Image (cartoon, helix red, strand yellow):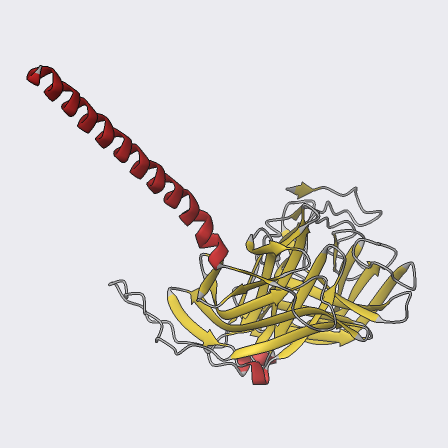
Length: 409
């Protein structure tokens, strides 16, 4: 998809921004070119946001903003004699994100990062006390050598006021020289201090390592509160199965060292878990047909043992289906397949994301009911087959006796 903004007054630049993707992992890639079609700014990164706001009943809610759909880049520029380069991103319902760069001999600065959101959006911010557009400006002042490309695979967290920005897998070079993006990388401090697995060159493909088997994880009790009342309950043991670069790993979540946040709305509810190596693990539930709930979405971002960041999201799931006003329960091990590279094994599961009364679970729908749905038609079919066999046997026996009576006569 190409965006061709109008000619910038007095700049002599035609800006061409290439949007290569805002996929389920929230990856964005932007290439700004000048009038001669030479690259002048290149950037590739991933990001999401967490916003806490006050409601009309004087409580606080937290929302996770990870939907980077409908992306545009209006206002992005390679800069001129008066102004430095700028990446301006618009996405979703009234969100914008802007990064400004300035020259600072002998290099340049990643100067400021601004995030704006419209709290008047009732879908994203239901029952918000305040209205209008809120902008959060963050000074960064990160110095990068002029001919280097800045790289940071580690998770960067920028927190100010009620907004937390998560940015990772960053590649950016402002002031690209001669239209050629540099191959010389300038690493962020977090990547410099990370232990990266060595690259082994070989002509024979290495076999894919298998993860070391682990014992079952501890079962934890998690809850989300809306004001003074509990609005979401979850009990489960969680085991994460990750495959990255043909290397598999298994992580058991320890509930004793895991933080819990989340939010509850009439049609959606979110449970967010985090720990020292897990930035966030989100379970998002939704209502369907006004009478049932199910697990609709899982988002995760975590640091692996080799220092890299693993992030994935899927908002098109369909697990843990149960009637509203009840809970979903499954004692046996289940697998939630989020993607080809990420699965979650659950143990002793019980969840209720809606209509929690007095902080207690309601009557549970057991996952064995799913099995019963298959067993019932099998049992009915077997019974009908048995009846049919008996009828046929009775018919043939009666026919034989009737034939014998004719012979005696």
